[in-house]
Length: 185
Image 1 (cartoon, rainbow, N blue to C red):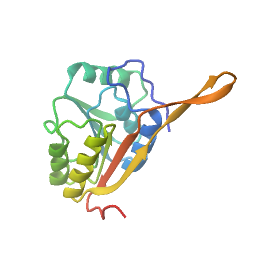
Image 2 (cartoon, rainbow, N blue to C red):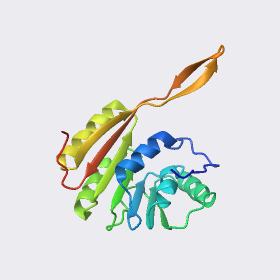
Image 3 (cartoon, rainbow, N blue to C red):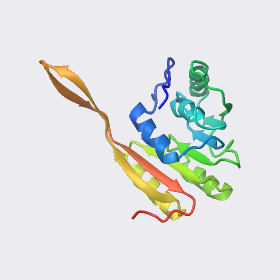
Image 4 (cartoon, rainbow, N blue to C red):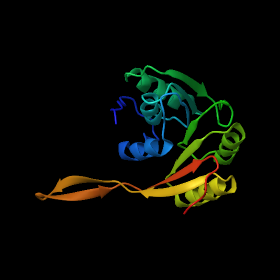
């Protein structure tokens, strides 16, 4: 996966690179896709996706975070048609998206409704809180989108008294949906 440079930070932080790699794999992005990032924050997913698709729409409700997305985009070699929208989803969502990532949980039911109504092929949502993950799985299932749920926990090694120990990050639930999903096997 090509490198994403993030010299500018937002308090919510970027999607970790390992989680981003799995997320992008689950989105199955192609070169002609229109990708939508809902809750762009630092722009880490926007930037990584922009290196794979022809068009990106990034939506962020907090203007300072959208500015961070814009500044991080400028620090990366991205030659893609990118639209940035300072609004709260589902407002501002395009009607012609092929794939959509939800990086936040605010209004996710309305965003999923929009995805179903407009025929988005692939939807992935990352969630860090267990209760929200449960609600999101049910929302995907109710809309016949649920394809799979992946729980990921990344641990990074560090030296401790001449040996290697690990710092654990919180788990992330990656909820994968697609149009006409068969559901969990």
